[in-house]
Length: 264
Image (tube, rainbow, N blue to C red; front, side):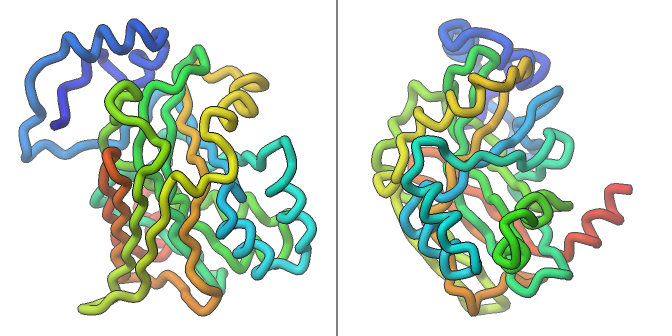
């Protein structure tokens, strides 16, 4: 069930402490009509950040794709996590919107991830589904190309609703992804948050202790589902991601330039 927003914006809600957010949300009643188009639950000065190499599968995949093997091995075992900027609120898309792949990248992949919603006080207040769409071959060519591989038109999609932190635990949630191509399935994968190499709660201080987010932030926690190197996400594909107790995210793939031109 999706309820009406108890504040005029998501960012206004995230300026409150967790206890006040819970009281405010629990006082809210009513349901959103089924025919209402839902927007991404990020606005104002909110940003989306992401963590990398938080699952063993992610570490192995990065090692496969790069000539700088030690970079990913070292960050996997390091105390300091890999964190990177993904998108400002106005670039984020949601369920039913197109996502983009870079035409100058030989290998593009979807990355299904659990996203944590953090308020202005650095408290986790909820969860959502994130697709951290990535240009795998660009990152693999040189780790310094990471911003180009991660930040471009249509590269960040999140589910339309936020599940409050008090409604679900995240210790062992099933994460599933299917890529449909025409009438067939091009890729299918399953993992669980139980496979995290790092505790989710430990990622948040690494970000909010050094940056202030007055309107809150979404931190995507990394992927444990990575296709083999012979898989390339293509325009026309449909990506379906489901995270148990959190939500579902479905997006059709188009070229990033097409999304760029449509938003000019």
